[in-house]
Image (cartoon, rainbow, N blue to C red; front, side):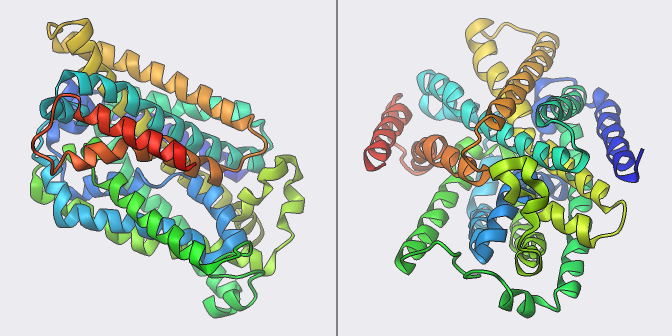
Length: 441
């Protein structure tokens, strides 16, 4: 058994152990889904940052960085802009909602009809995204260990599921901070190696094959500028609406929520250059690397980061990179597991099925069952996405955000300022914006 496999197995054991260690911290659904609202800013900030960071960053996004250079960094700077506004205004407001799930805030603001509409309307976005992230992780694992991607998706999904079910949000948030340190240590080391072997950033840019700033397939600069504007507008809405308030519901108070957003903003500004320096190096000095990954078909470009680690870094580093991939994916999949399970239990099972009569013991049991069910759905989605041979991970993530996420965020963003609304305000606004979007498409 080589050293890389040993490193990954040890990390598997670490994830499961964290869940087991925190099994007694969740005595209520508030503890299970938001840590009882008792977490400090550095834990919340790490989680907020990690929810926007997944194995996709090292596969789909790295593949885009390999082909188009700096352009992909714009996506992450837009995230940083969203977190900056979180810090400046929205994060404290979100913490003051004092709810267990974000959908409960929608119910208090707009009524039961809107609650049920957004309960069933919000879950597909995060569930599908979690499947994409799991598929991105499987690309790396399959390429490194020559294991079928289907097997990888199932096995890794089960490991992540075990940790989430046993430990709840306390295990996830506590591990997110440790995982953030693992990811930053691995990526900073790789970035330093790329900088050194590439003769500096300037030399890497000078040897980049194609237009480093805007990519090689751009016909009009005005289109690129317009794309940047819309990406920033989209991420402003994505990061600053009541539907995504869940990031800060677990904070101890408003001050801790604001500090957490500031930490996430700083990390999102510094991170992209560190993450994408290795793919830029691969484009400049290893442009034909994809020939070694023909088994991945059209997705071979997504292995640019892996190619760098295998060719440039010392033995054992691939295993550490895989540990970082698991760290990123596990933290991101929390949105598709605990968050969706919380929405199902608190906003459908409790008010609709049990008519507000369920005990906390019953709700805790139902929460774990719902988490397992969500895990099975995510694994199934990951397997389905793997069968889509003609669409890259980068395109899948952007399409999901545009077709599902963006129309839903507009009414819950406007609702933070529009005080006089009817009970169907969210539904009517969402429907109008959705059909307007479809007409433009």
